[in-house]
Image (tube, rainbow, N blue to C red; front, side, top):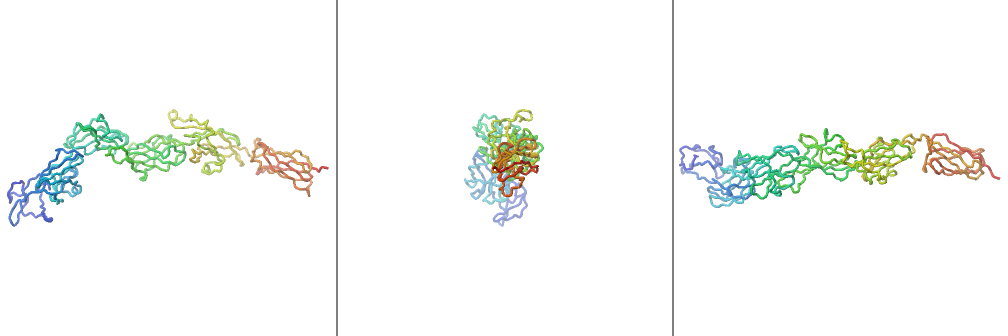
Length: 611
């Protein structure tokens, strides 16, 4: 082998020694030489071959040069490639591969990524590849004689350059919302007459008016034809922002890439009205949310989103979402994180979210979550008397006429299920509707700065009375609330201790007349007072009295026992029964209030026989 194409064999100064042994592959002989880069046609050589017939020149075949029409192809626009050489045929192969990734076509990795080009044979020295359309980039033009491939792929001497934007790079990758970042654009044959800008998220470059001002950019042409364009620093909320290019004389802008800014865009709830301690779902919307993120719902009054531990965003929570109307170049980056099974007591909460890798830490997302229902209550007086109406001021969020309330017997601190299974719920449940006139804004609900709260705090004045016939000084009652029929829950607050004042029930009674004939009836009245001397009892209390004959003198041996009627209620603290004797004597009647181990009051009636 010798440099030059007009040499005579044998060569006077060969680059490879005579007698070099080649490697035979099928009907071809591969010679290993080091005089040039393999497959580089820019090196003109003469190859001599010695057979039994003597020395002869080996004719050169394959690609020698190429041209394109137009001279500068543009990305996405069809162009033609004319390839020139010797002994070209339809058995040849033609293709391209990225010049940024490979330096020669014969490398195995390059062959694996070759993009084939269709061509027609003009003649044995001319191939034509027409309607070639490639993205902007620099390519190696590759040719293989007779489709041999492998080491016999030959690389054109000059790269095939297709003009346009090749890549859009973000200096902070990925950028986070409201953190500054820069956008750089690299491409081929870009020029300063073009405009580049970042368009609003969710818009199309082609739909923007031509009057849209392009931002000042910096052009770096040091590596011509490679050009780098640097856009001004961006500071954006999360979203997918089209990067647009407006070429001088063009009627519309085109999208050359998308700047995706990661972050949380907002959230939605599974129900329009979240109720006290009722399960709901939060769907967090954002861009490139990941399993490294954290979330937490925290009371708005607790100091915001600082100092939280948080809960992990797990893989099953994440889901990609398509973005309607987005630039076609936009990757599918909108992500939702679905948080199910949330249950909160009534109040105002912040949805706090921490993006993985965000140096700023926690941030509040969207407006606060308002959970409607009762917040707390106060009873006036704090310890009301039994059977006496008392006032209850109930503070809450979005309390309404559709709600229900009930005082149930028992202490919620001792029995947590009181508001779920108490028998008092059925009998004592009441609607808020009759008290709707007192439903109004809570004047005590203000912001930290003392301004009226923007949230729907309100209060309602309720009236109730309680009593329970159990022999203790106090009865503890718990207030339960049902928000719009979604379930009963206890209302936070000091339980009502109703003072029944029933250490004892004092009873007295007397009959009239006190002297009566046999078979006549006496009317007997019972008067009952509690330990404070107040009248005690109601209609249901009548059954708690026990009236009996304590003794008869002298004993009536043959007379029938007297008749004593059931005790009936007359008025609070007053009860009545009737006594009819059937024998002569002095009758001592006793009366007792059921269950009280107290002295039994008595009354004496004299019964005689009429003539």
